[in-house]
Image 1: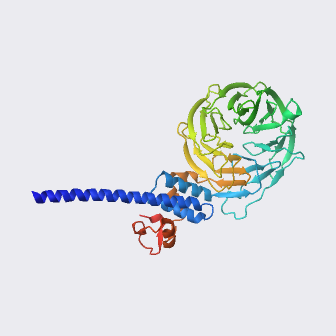
Image 2: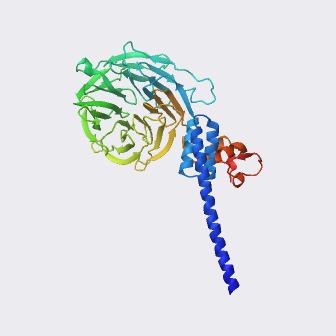
Image 3: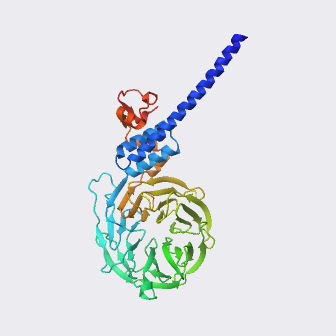
Length: 452
């Protein structure tokens, strides 16, 4: 009996030891993986290759939310390119992601075809510049097909451009400023319908002007509506058919910022259909889907998703916790399923809004070195642009879905022979014994895609 009891006690002690040993081993792997992920994040700007190798090793050792997010951000960042170092306060993009406008007092026209083809080494420069003799042309809008553009700003007038041939833009017409005093006619925001046939401008005087651009050379002013008093427009978003407008504004009597929804189905008689009041009651930026049913609003540290199936009764469906201390701009794909948010940070954040009630972070677009003023997304989310004092940056997101679904598999698919040398392993792991991770066949390097 005593012998049996001794055997049982030894067995129990052995099981407890093994359980504790396994637990300690798991914790060791987690700590090592997180450490490698942190090193990878630190190296993104200076050593992209090593950042990718370390990030992949972290995922192979312990694939959790932290290591996966780190590798996704690194892989997306590697697909980023500096389009131009010139300061830019505004950037817009055609639906197909091929034509972009960026700039300040003058707008550069870019054909991104070569930038989106990795086989082409020599990338093209801007193909044209939209100029005006007067200063203050600091804003722009672009139709979905990239054939019609607007530029305007402090001067009050808005220029209509024919970009049928992007390298040879034609100044088609000028839309005169509002009916108020000249100082109040400065355009603060503008928008174009997807087909370029309807335009909306909002000026400093609080007037909303709706234009018919069916004939670009002869714009027709359909209405001028005083829609604000003692308030300043932030931005204007327009649905694809031009039937719904979403306008953010800031009270000039207080710091209150909010959003209103306007029905423009009859462009000659715009009707305010609702006030969209965020929980924070302090919305700076907005974005809207092509059908006008999904609206995104936000400011520092937060953003909200709203459903406008009934434009007269907006419904809040979700709130995003955004790590930005301010919100400068938002972009939303026409289907309302992908959002891009940016502010005083060196990265823009992509969100998946496929489930409007449960938004999910996709990636942070790394590579830009300064705060971001303006962002744009292609219709399928395959191209993203960011602009600010650091110039204009482009990300090719064509394979984002595969990267997000399984970043480790995506990274190994591109380079299955990825290795980390014994010296680099010792350097970035603090001398951790790699015998528990290294597969067979290599004596002085770690085959990352085959980590055990």
